[in-house]
Amino acid sequence: MDLSLSGHTYLVTGGSSGIGLATVRLLLAEGANVATCARDASRLAAVHEGAPGAKRLLTTAADVRDRESMDRVIAAADDRFGGLDGLVNNAGGSRMKPRTR
Image (cartoon, rainbow, N blue to C red; front, side, top):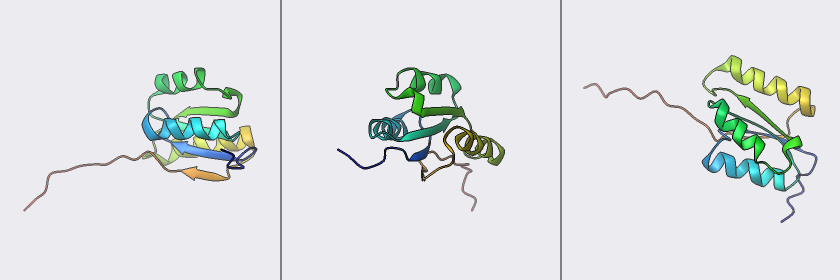
């Protein structure tokens, strides 16, 4: 499939497993540059090592709930690829608390 993504750059949050990892792999297969982040640096390293097109992949450990860490991810993507064309906002966190009556 050709989605005409070659040369474009995307940020995928939560890219170390599940839907995020599948999205990273699809974007790389389509020729896109991919910046991805997740909280677990060792899982991100494994993603990078096994990725076809790894020279078009930037992995950064970051928590989407922390603005400063996301600022670092975006700055790194800008430095490496010259900016972003899109975002796949796959990661999320919740802060569950008990219901009060």
